Image 1 (cartoon, chains in turn orange, cyan):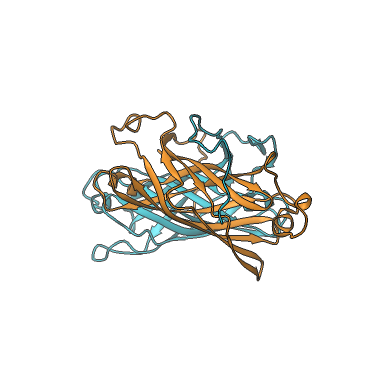
Image 2 (tube, one colour):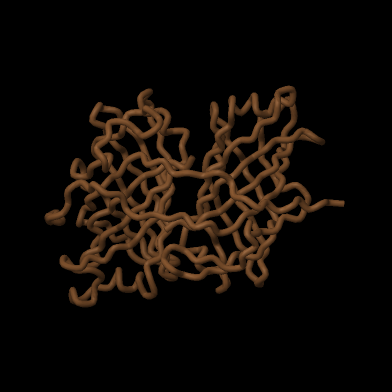
Length: 189
Length: 182
């Protein structure tokens, strides 16, 4: 007979360690793949060398670890976005960071976001600017939570490979165009 | 041609707001499908009754956006994980199938890391003292009903503990807390 284990009455320890932030300027010429089963596919690329990776406090090391802070540019990045008919956006993002000391860090993360009721239809709608999401004065920000993992051959940043990270971000939409993607990256610990 | 972006496109000096709201826990036992002569293979759910629960027995939680959400009432029906192993870290990559108190099952597809003290090989050496490994994972959910539909819109963050035991093969007692990030 299986004896049920007593339920825990306390949570396991957890904390978030801030690592770095990045801002990605999206290329305005997105690839509209179009209607596919279940939704619409869109590919978005980062504008190379305009997208920065930095520490918001400008610290030179990661607090409490002694590891060097990560500073550089997003050398290349792409977002394969699936805007589903049920107003949920799924995507798989892959990107490469070139640090100021010339190391390359490869990052990847899945995104799940709710576009709001009718959000998918509004995002793909053609027509006048009035019907589109976001304006220059009042951009439409979609909150994002992601879970990045990183890989690098650099010994300086190899510790990143062993972390499961969490990204807290926003994607800024102006006239249905994805303009700016910004994230703070934390390590789960 | 790329248009200029925003006048305020400089680097930020403040972090974006963030919150992790505790959602629910689930504790269960996994059985490792391997023996002394084979490296770690797939893990499957050991026989047992594994319900979801809230450590404070709450039925509802309020997330940072002010939404009231029901704590899922479900039982873990099956679990599988292939646990690809590297030096000190094992990569978690698997699925949970839960039966809920509605007619719709809840599928959780997760990935993450398992930080193993002293390395994975040593961790599974039955002559060494047993130590727990810490799991950090993220999960996407599939659910076609209405009651827990909001779980499909988000990735859950899981914090866990894997404790090996060596009675009748290799087992892991797994404790997981799931958080709703916002």
